[in-house]
Length: 89
Image 1 (cartoon, rainbow, N blue to C red):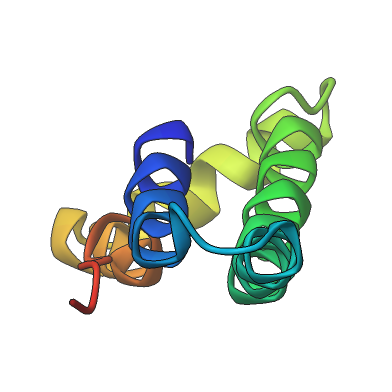
Image 2: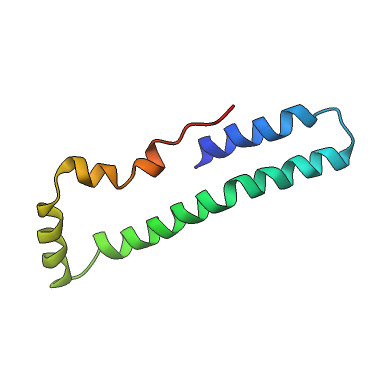
């Protein structure tokens, strides 16, 4: 998220450098709006993963069976939204 944040922040902020403070404030609001939904989704996913991957027994047993039924490709595909992100210039 930090690398993504830096890319989006630079894209939003650099064009307004040298402008009035109001333009910089607007650029920062645009950055916040651009990042809010994605970072919130990443946080929700991380919390869910904490519960799922650190489940106590006997839930861990059920989790392991469910994971073994998935192919590696399907498991990775669940995170395409996260790892496939590209900054739109």
